[in-house]
Image (cartoon, rainbow over all chains, first blue to last red; front, top):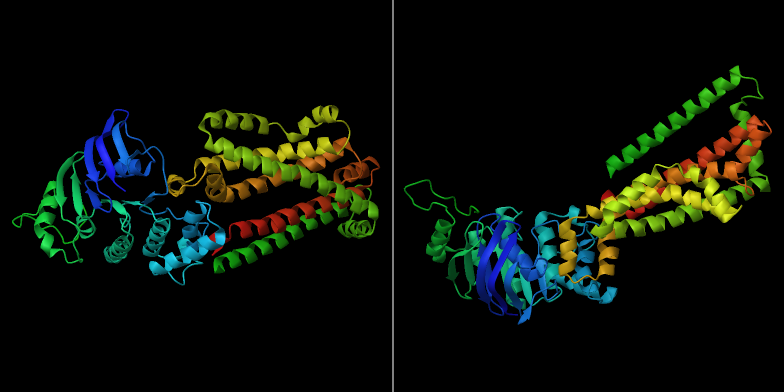
Length: 256
Length: 256
């Protein structure tokens, strides 16, 4: 599903958050939005989800103006979005039950998806009984089960430790390759953006405008991002992180 | 789990000690006062045993429980509905909450004369007074809890395509259940007090309150103390056994 932003602007009262944002995201494209905290990237994502509306400008999904949430555009939150009163399988099945699928069928499908994110054996656990990484695996299963055409990810692994985060990025990458939704990923983590995305948009501080657009193309990638060292340095510089070797070096994998 | 068990045992021990102390002070009073003013503890228990074998006692108990069930039950159902609606509709929330705070400061027994004349001598005014006592704490706790349901839980349901009804049933209701139960336990105390006092005043057909008031009128102090004993035991059983059990069942996920 193609996403088109034209002159999208958002302000909360006097606070201007996004200023005249223009871009087209092609069907099946994977785009990462990178930028400083509180710059309005998440607001953009929530607009695509239909949870917020633009102050001015137009946003269309599949040629239709986005006015309210729809299961074809689903959102994965950073954390705490699973329902604590439901087991993992109930949480995943809920996405189908909300679309009026019968309980038994939804459960059977949820079991398959939990297996795909390697949570077999944890179906009947409650979210607080499993680790943060497992909760996000479950959140991915809950997002993918409804076969969305657009997958929106709002710093999905931001609350995880570095190693778990990389494992989850691989899980997500595999799911995206198999299901091929259009993906918009909001992240602080430059490496995450480079690893997952075909195109990276670097945002400025509030009000957010695009500082740079980097097209990587849909190419096979591993966590060894040394081939992208130049791009990575560019992005970090744009975000105000010093990469000059004569001053204090930036730690590998540090998030911005 | 282990902490729950130990606190469970500790609280049971606390109850045994408390009951022993209360009965001890009663017996001390009985030693100092003549029998026609304060009966011995064993005398009251002997009377209680006699009551258990009398059909009049069971008839009164049955009537009281029916009134309690009808009044408390309808108050809980209405309280949940009004609480959810008030909590989700911004327009009515503040005035509704203010109205509840004003009305709940009126002792429910004060409504007896009004409803007695409005509805006539019978079960209905007692049931309504019981319901009034139980309704306000239930509605208020549900409304407060509804307001503070986590935003991400609501957003997640919206992007999964939940309808309004599904949202209430699958998200709001389970999210407010912990506070609802606290409110319902508070409401039970109110309902119980309203029931006994309304029965004492109205005196319609057999009932625990009427039986107590009648014993007082004929200066049968053993009867008075026996009735108080029944009222205390019943309240403890309903609150500590039945309501606690329902609570553990509904909030099973919190105790794992």
